Length: 202
Image (tube, rainbow, N blue to C red):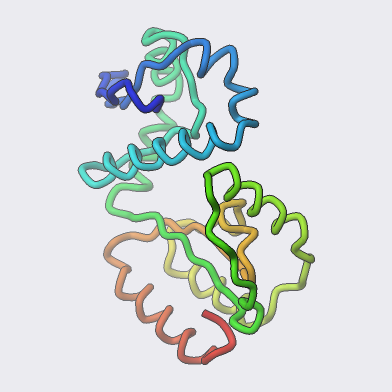
């Protein structure tokens, strides 16, 4: 997580926790200040996502929220033991499923050409400015139909989210938990709505 320390497995109450030992100063005392430092946040959050992705390629995983810090192995083990039943339920829910991010863009609105950001800080600043400038709009009926169709095939669906929220033309986004056995249904649904929408949305 800090760009130097390895990520290692640690047995905790019947689960395997993947941990990285980090500076108590950088990730403890100064964590709140560092989370406001866009350059630090961009680098650290990308490292976190890469680790989650690498573990996911090999086994089922319940990712911890970025910035989750424990003072010791003992405090981590105690937390996992306390939440053992909830974690077990969570693993039952995600086993054999994938998380999908789905976004709908209005093609006519995607006209702004963004220049390449020179740093992670500049990238996050631009996203923040776009999010603040984006007007609130009522969701179109055809997108509501699409969202309802996705909910029918997903184990769970959560609309919204800040990731990508400032992108030009973005009309709707959601995260889906989809059983792998239903992948063909997702492909068919995406193909059907893409065909029906034509050049209106992508």
